[in-house]
Image (cartoon, rainbow, N blue to C red; front, top):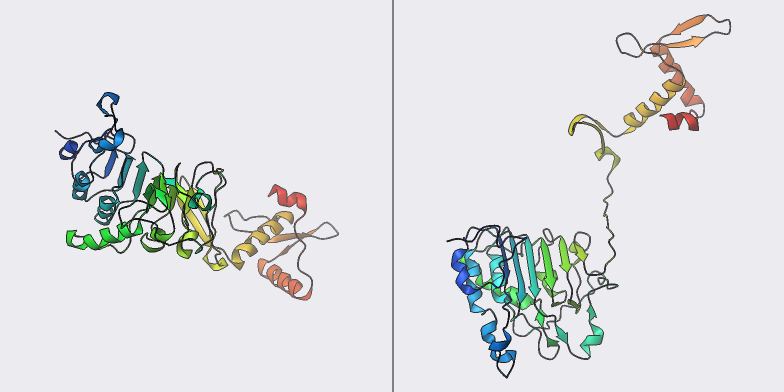
Length: 340
């Protein structure tokens, strides 16, 4: 019996996931969403507290079946009571189309002194460091995904764990140079610049979300990522940064859309501006149109009241001469421009 795709999808994690449930998950799933937190019953806890209860924590080696999924696009692991980065990063190397990675710890890190005053919690008025000014000093413990004891206790985004997983991935079929993750969401992590400067693809990573209980131990992005990656954190004002790229005039087009489809398109250049000016000028001078829809000749009024028809070619010639020997034509009156 297989688990329904809705259960374990993005909106419905499999709560209190147990190792025995791996066999019920189809290996061609594109989304895996697991809650690894196991509730502890009070009457089952002994006098020594939780420490005697490794049985109440999802075992590390029981995470290995995650490597059998090769079509993942989204991986969510929530309520983690210990580090599983050993298999998480290996699974990412083996899934070239994975885009969404969410890692949430059940408990936040505890940072010791003097680092508690040096590392800022990622919340409210926190801001990212200047490009290239982060810290890549290794703060972990042998690639296990946890802080070294001298810094505190808690989960650490471990660049050595990522590197070790990459070395183990080629025999299993991976040929990736960078992690293919597009959106990374973290909860309860200590982060620095190391993993982002070395292992995340600057051409794919686009969004980093820090949820509560994350700590900045030197986080920064590379120059290639700084203008492309959006960083979110708790308490940040909801603003949107828009990056623009200068474009030459010759590369622009004016298009007309009708029912969502392009009807006409004209390159922007001197012809477009000239046409716009001519349109306004002819409106001001009441230029008529022929019966067939083409523009007719300009009609000039003599002082005596009689009409004289002037050909279009002569008009254009006189207009060009006038522009060359005199000042540029005056702009449209303000009222006429507004009506247009």
